Length: 295
Length: 273
Image (cartoon, rainbow over all chains, first blue to last red):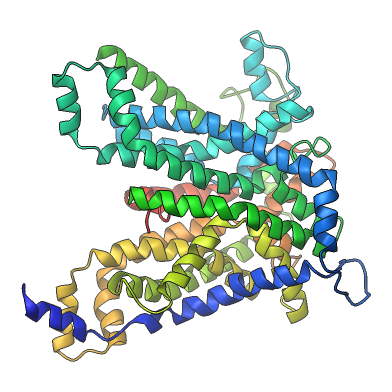
């Protein structure tokens, strides 16, 4: 089946583009219209507690948002969580992927166990960790005590609450990093390693000079996806700390939620939503660019 | 070489322990008596199991309704994602270029990239206009809209594995696009449909942000119930752990079923165009 016959037959296939119409309709109602409606209401003054008809207020909500210290402090917290989260999750994911890539006995079983956390209901995970992080009765402090470390008020103080959030997110996200790195490692041709060994390179040289450059495109993609996921972070935060103590673990996304559904300032929240979308945009574009190199 | 092996095993074993322990701890707390829960050193195995926490959870008036809501919403949105998604994925797999392909790709990636809250604030407002707040139908539609990109990406890889020759011979017999899709392609892609269905239902089962905003008493699913234990004044870890366990068990079961496709599902949309 080669040559012009196949090509002409392929041309004969009826277009199937209209098969996408149901998806278009669904996404129009759940994504497209809400997105533009969100921009629309961000220029109004809708308050969920008020019965007055909304007015157009121009850029007022944006001005308020940019002037409010909470916007900047929650943005700072989002960036802190993102930075330390990446710092922790990417190396850990690489190490685990390397260990799995050794193809030792039981690798399949280890892989199955290691990806379990990313499948579990984040709300239930948050609840479990809340119990484990309990200052007096939590199993984590009990264990630290055995190691001679004093009680940590995990969820009650600002810095440790931030780390608690990062720990729980890492528990669920490291497997994702691990899986993508493992896929990239598997794609490297074994002949490259053999050649390097013949040239007398040792393990750490092979990793730095050969493996690392080859998985860098994947690492970039992971970094972009993880940044977007940190901007999305909600469930774990909501259960673990509710953004507290104070606002010390409130991310920009959680702040938008609080503005809309606790302070009932829907339009102001929508303006924050538009700002979040604007922050996501460059990451999104970099992700697309980076993922073209991976395939 | 030997050191490398030992290091790898140490890392894998300790990571496996850390991955499993919280799950073990939830289940074990759920079958412990209050006295055994509130004690130090923690009791790992040396306690008498009790069904108390489950009995008090199941005797909540609202529990079974909420459990049923979770099942209805999960099944409904999964079916919708599969039906709409398989049609679209087929088009994507067979016609690399068609009008609107680029826009649809962009839209799907935007769903993956945008924080849900950005869309849910306006959706909340719209739904209160349309009288769709706290409606299971609305939840099914929103879940499906948020999850369909994953379904499409995953199904696409299954459809691409079906050789085009199969279609060509059917085409010679004069089958229409729809007949060919429903009678030839879908049966061939059945394992893919099952795997995708299970994967999308996991996403729906775990979803929290959509229902916490869009569901009241009528449509509330399980994660919202689990979360509501936190706001109670009395922190009673036993029933809480029981609720968490009830949410987690179906996942563990389903995960075992789709073990083979899990890796593809979990990384879908991450690196593919």
